[in-house]
Image (tube, rainbow, N blue to C red; front, side, top):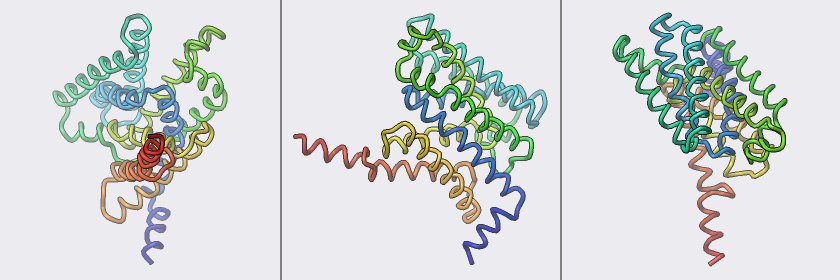
Length: 287
């Protein structure tokens, strides 16, 4: 009976249907971006970029309120500016990419918080930082689904090039000269996914859905194709299970989804073939 009520809630209520479809679309788009960030050793870049969209979204909020075109447009412009500025700084100075992103994202975060705190309210800041999956409307759902579609199409078209660029950017730049194209394309796709994700889960929660499934999958498999498949499966499961948990126990939906993904990550650290236990065991036998 309880299972029937949960399934009924996910299918009968319009806001739950939109939340389910929207979160699953987010998972489909964010999971492969997380894998690519993992391959590039830029896992913390996701956290930096999630904060980079905040000042643009804050300015958009001040100009147009909590309306989708202003929030999404402002977040997209700010995220692209930070990503491109950090990339240029990394290539033109002695700073590496992590250091340049850290500087720009901290500046962007400070500007965003200052704008909302000065001309908005604490409620507005909480909405931008944490979002609400259950508040997804039809325009937001259209944006999230469109970004997921664009991500999959881009990945299908540029798969070989982007994987090579992740593995050895110097080699692909020397042999084909397309390294910058793949790099900028990846930055644009990452920013698009963060803009779509913060509409539903806020800037602080969006990175969890992107990086936790990728890190969890990496503990179980080695082949790149299986990394994508398993990351998708983990992200989709976390979205469905998180929504069920939020309905069953009256929890905020975004943190519930990230907590489910985090719990799977912690379990994988203990049980996965490349987790803590196996690594300790292998080290013991090596000694």
